[in-house]
Length: 154
Image 1 (tube, helix red, strand yellow):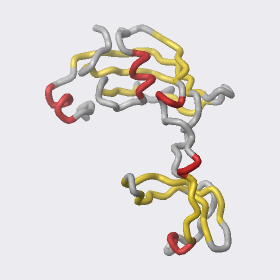
Image 2 (cartoon, rainbow, N blue to C red):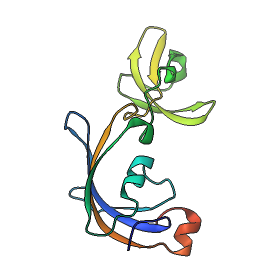
Image 3 (cartoon, one colour):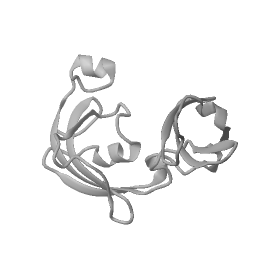
């Protein structure tokens, strides 16, 4: 069976950056299962494995526009330190859920000043080429329940 909309796909994968460093992998875990055509994985990877079948392997480089988007400078902001009242110590690298005009988002602390905290709302992989090695481990028709909920049944 070929991968198409409304199929459940199981993949083993390794994601590396342009420097060859492993960012994420399914190695040592069960294959990742997702419902194809329902935006459960990044668009570029979904497009690259469409039409493939169980047993096939591929390597693909996904540009930022088909991954987590370009890096946007406008998502870096200085926030008053008072916004973090109740947090013992705010340090670079910490992540927080924040409300924005576009809804909830995760921000990462970049810098802590005397009066403000600089936060970055970009996804950590925004602006990066994503290099995937993928092995298709299984493809099956999705159930009606999976299609209606848009995800693989647990």
